[in-house]
Amino acid sequence: EPSCSSRYRTLRQCLAGRDRNTMLANKECQAALEVLQESPLYDCRCKRGMKKELQCLQIYWSIHLGLTEG
Image 1 (cartoon, helix red, strand yellow):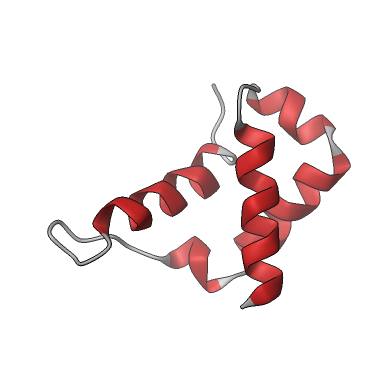
Image 2 (image 1 turned 180 degrees about the horizontal axis):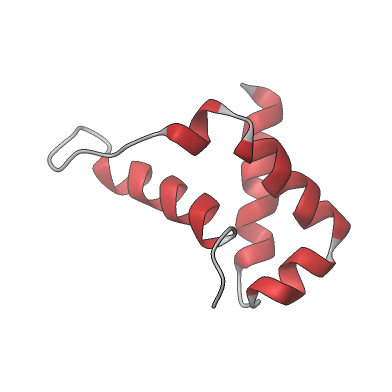
């Protein structure tokens, strides 16, 4: 989905080299995270040995690291 894909790219850029508080202070980063929380990507689950396991794990942790404290 194009809107999800662009928000995910934004979130990845926001997470690069920043802590959570700095990222959430940026309105664009916060908006991207909010959109992704409502997307199917938020509920995705990765399984060991799946075809795109590494890509799945990267997506999962990008979204969930943006949500966790510390």
